[in-house]
Length: 187
Image (cartoon, rainbow, N blue to C red):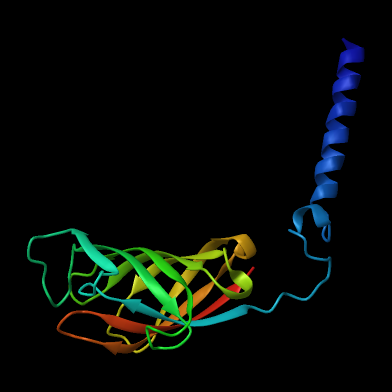
């Protein structure tokens, strides 16, 4: 029994020593590839235009659920799925950089405010094949909206940051919009 207790104590001390070493400041095992003492990495800045059209041929956003006649002031309860092109310039025919794929839901009963969930899937340039995930409130009538970046894939694993959206143009009759995005992301 004493021999078993000694072995258990040795095992406990070994595990405790390994755990405390792994949590020692500067240990690379927990640093996700950053050098000990390195300055924080500057954020990557992406700039593009988002084109959302529910009336286009084909449409890039489609209402899939919600009340039969949602309030036109708020669109509360309406659910839209989107697969919107992202381009370098405001013109839809300019160079494609990716797609915004996800959904938005009218989530405000007093004003037009959406819960927006989307993946910014990049299809050209240095980040081709990578994506960023946005999850946040989009208040489309505000001059500038800010939504958090909550993750990513490829070059953007462990991503965090924010997206600022500014309406470049909007057709109030159809709801079609062209939105300028500035995305700042740490990865």
